[in-house]
Length: 521
Image (tube, rainbow, N blue to C red):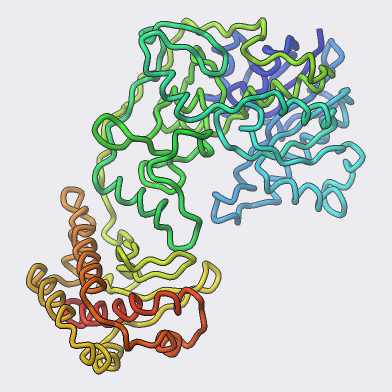
């Protein structure tokens, strides 16, 4: 039997791949208690928490057996673009990569593989050629970014695989592997007798843990999720809710109820996040696998941080030099993962208690006035100002060069002759309507509403009312005399989106400048 050790083992994604492949796991190393406990209870092992950075390769890695394979997933936090906008401490992250390669150099396995986020591919190439890892350049024969969905994981998850293993053989497996969709995962877990979509295990639903759903998203949470995905001002639009006819988007370790990264699906009465079991199956863990986090968030974290065991299975198959014509799918493996007797801890699935800070930020685009690529009209506050001043703004540019045009009395007066010439009384009607319905509103009252856990969604009601007025104006007004160059003159920039949407942009300039003057001075 071939042997392997697992560095930064987490909850057991590499170890499960070994078990499925008939490889002996000689040792696993992990420092996070809950992840290590999950690994131990699922595989009946007794690995202690170990900080790999403190391991002496000469004194602490003496095994009685020859180690054929070294694998692992060093922490990706410092490398991830999700951490501080991609500004994590790369030097600190490289400490773990250095230690990993130092262990490979010491053990001299036949094959080895290291998994991490895609960004590490470029960092590795740079550091191996001329940086802190140059000493190990001879060890690294493969640096490749793969999509786990190509290997049967029900998730589009791009990962970097580096190492020395038969990459051509690994690539060849994709030809015979079918993709599993998010919808197939969700549907499989709704039946009275559940059949694991990855492994074919059939078990009564009453015997499967973590099937319970959280409470549905509130109307405010639904709105924030929808806007951040479907109407993001800068990034590409996403589906809301998530599409079910393709592999899931990436399951992340940090997933709040209101974030662009959250995977949202329909519930019986609204919208919800994925439950723990759905996330585990999407990552490729059997329905019998138990996740021993003390809280719901810690379970989400350990699953999101894991390496998909279906991916590691195929990596090990390549290390075993199994030809594509002889490959068995994971469901055909002789290994069956027994459910541990100690069940996972119960999670609190109720709605979280909301307590918002007084300087809570608001920044959302006005309906019918959002154009993508960073061009939009928005309602936002300014937490840096003493009164957290609210106002409508016109914003354009990109994330590295954001520009805005003040929507003030001067702009309104400059456009008045043009708007009046069109003889469109609808402007005046809509301005008067908003002023009547929201009489007395100001920055202070909007902020008080926005930080109230009971009525904060009323701010979106105000924003939607403004959007409905914009829609009415656009349908009833006559803009035949408006030249597209007028917008370019105001913003002092030539831009295709500006000229293509000149009529609605002029509508936004005049209407929202008027509202700023009436409501927010």
